[in-house]
Image (cartoon, rainbow, N blue to C red; front, top):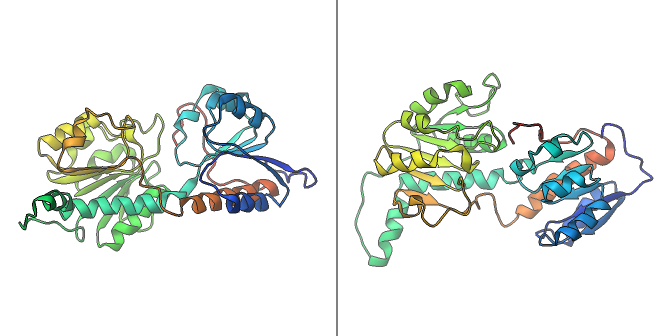
Length: 330
């Protein structure tokens, strides 16, 4: 990966992303120095079809089965998603010759806007007004909140968390954050805490946003203790990974009135089970893990992949390389 590829040898590229059109395929081939031999595969293809197509490819764009990936000759996988938890397997960790990259910030702008939309909707009590519309109710609910002047704690200050922090600061909010390495400053964040100070960080916030990656290190990080430390009347939002939040404890805090509300796009089990209490809670916004999707998300994905294919062809270090080692997080 560090030495320049043999320019005389075409790159065998396999693309299994149904959202990509011909213009996207052309852009990806051109990014690979114009020397790519491209094969397409439908996302719903059979395991045998995936196996045969992967056996003839060097680079793949898609979501292959981890077992098929481990047994394939692929050298580079470009995942069309931010998360890659299912690829944290011992077999893939043992593949020193395989590099996996996620989609990086392709979805961050959409997710950040979705998060802020949920924040505004809850403080302005929009879900309650929407529920009142069928009855043609003209009743002021009063006690509407505002974001300006309030404090938000963003847990996870990667590409997504930074995008959320920027928008919150633009709305006049004080932004604090939590990240693995608190010595690394983040624009628009007034104070950065380490994971060991998570309880103290959320205790001063009116809004707490989970923008965490997946993996073992973040599972249950927003725990019962953390939720109990949040100030009465605060709001929780999760737009990172569902398993990072103790949902049972969250339901209890919402039902008991300790928390004013929650905006949730990701969940521990997806789809969210029919019997989840979250469905029926009037102070909760539930969206089906769609925050990152915008009308042009395929273009954003293509740009991210094209940049990495160009770097791969030039033998340069790749962006958004993920750590497949045991216990790693996305």
